[in-house]
Image (cartoon, rainbow over all chains, first blue to last red; front, side, top):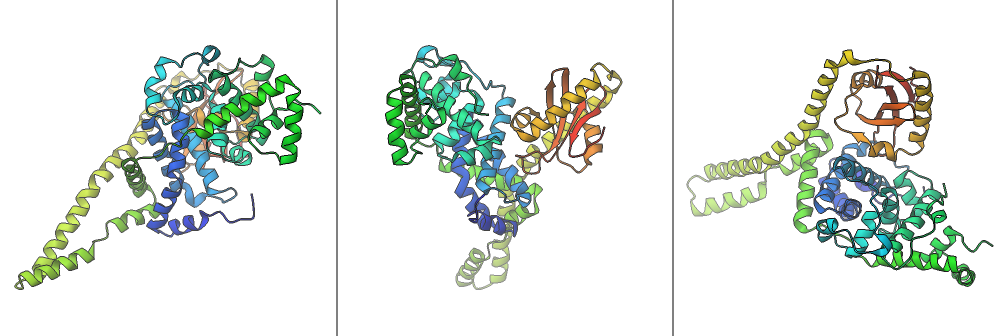
Length: 193
Length: 259
């Protein structure tokens, strides 16, 4: 928590006073990033749109209870991540899928998902193969460029855990991208928690 | 100094070290093949992620998203009722223009013309918004209907309760689980189930009928329990109760919930 005023605070106040423009401004400010997080988490455009919609509905319904202890965006992205976890579970997707052997070709079954995602296919396949908690950390920190502390608040875990997840997530990504041998078992087992 | 320091390697790869720190780290890591390999892996993954274009909403998706969010909020929140009520505001400026035109072209009954245009506009506004409201009404009603049906199903099965689980150990495990959940609720949110109604009446009695409750199965070493929780912001757990699904006795909870 810094002493700086959350840039969204004024918009939230205006929204709570019934200012339609503030609603539109908040949507405009955050909809692309929420959608990007959801799409990278869920790998399916329709699912990501549903999750984005659900996230904003949840947040706007509860914005009067927003405490302001963290930034509005942090809270918003946290709801988005939780919504994605929930949606993935509801759709029966498995969080942890096997990584390709020694950087082999991506699973053919992911082809449909790949077409709808604006990422390199091999990167998308590698991201999809990450355990969900690693994927979330890597997406927030490396793809979205959020600070470790912010990612920790979004994920509801200590900063050390985020560091560990990002480190291990990147390692698995590199392996899956085919340029590296799988890491030793001790590396997979390292924890900062 | 330990050259294989994952945090330091990750920070170096991400460009988060000061220049002097980075230079020192580069030199040390270069002497350690394992650390050097790891640094290369970290940089490879980071580069791939950073070069990937950010997904964007199309204009159509953006419009549809805002429309649906606004429509959903209209049914629930007074603040958004104002959003929609403003959309329902009669567009007086076009009406005035139309009325003036009518007055110029046919100066006979300008007032009739004004009322006619205004009525059409109001009707169009209503017609345009009706499908959104109706559609949203269906979407909003569905979960409640499902919850009610499940709750009724549960009530019908009420005689099936039996003390199968060891309540003592289960209570201790539940208490541990509550502490873990409060520290990191992500898994609880991930396992939330919309259609889970087990012990719903007990949870409602505990938290109050007005509370917005969510349920999740909670696997414990001695068996599965049911967690009901309140999350005002959809991110943190404000209060939580864990029930034994066999008889819906309260095993543990927070804050200060007593079995």
